[in-house]
Length: 483
Image (cartoon, rainbow, N blue to C red):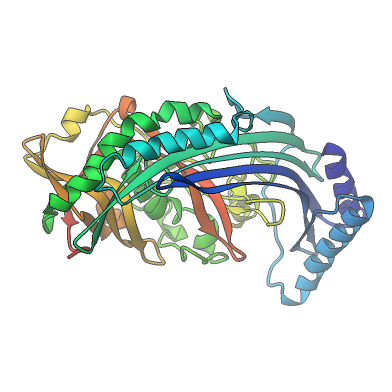
């Protein structure tokens, strides 16, 4: 793969470009799922190819191919340069890149158990055991469980002399139980909705999640929700579990800090951003206890946004986004960092494969743990505690939002009391984060994986990470989304 990368880079460089980089990738995936006692989907895929990005005449050009012969590389490089130069007629200003050093490195993410060494039969046996536990009670009408694996090796080479070989392996697993009664469906998921938990780990994650052991409780909750009281509507203190808070971070912090949205060069799938440049260093984003980082380093945890180098060859970094409630940082690329006068990218450029241009993407955007115990977070005279996302909606500036959750409980004088169904809450991003009153400590912090963040046109789907501990927010609008 290194020889292919260097050959492709040479093909581009000989055409007189100002800059070029190349990504050669070899990707392997496996997806296994079950539905009501039967195999739902069993599939695997492999893909290999090269993407060539060039800067010529101050314009970007990109081309990709799965033909790794010398002829294929020459053809792709020529097309990338042709595309760049065709942009000269429409160019308003040339592209400038923040400087970056040359790196030669090899990095492999740790995996205790290679997930691809575990047979499909064993995958199915695990999922069917979960399925059997979920459907032990006949009131469960639909049980679904799934396991996903991916290994991606990438060799990056650029005209500044970098040659970086990195391999990332991730695993995801989870299940859901649905109960239908009186034309209403109630659902409970574990350990999170939308497929479960995903991390940069091997098959050991499946064992860590204890799927079979948690299935009876999840099934019981799905059934009990039909008899639960409707979540009240009003303005109450709100407590969110860490998984729901992860999605709140994703939508109301992660997307708006993508600098390409702020500068107007990206708007697909999530709109633009209310975080205009004049607010950097001035906006009170949250209360004093709110601290958020964008951190791709492995020290932060095995997140889907963890890597050694981004797709521009910039090392993984930790960047403060919100510090003591103050908005202090964007996610940047070499181009956008230069556009706002910064001297270096903070390493957030990624593509979902060799066929796509890299974009600014979330790495691990995480709420740092607080100093409160879990008991102190729940220490409210009256509050609503919500778990597990069910639905979300947010405007194209990432400002007004509404989220629904699968389940909630009433909290009275710090104690969990009655179960509540169809909970929801809404608000305005900055008002919501400024209402944050308490965040649980590091022993309750979890780094959640979101495998399906969409962006760009053509669409790119990529994994991100969001760490959070349970937190309490004052006087939030609760209820109203469901009748």
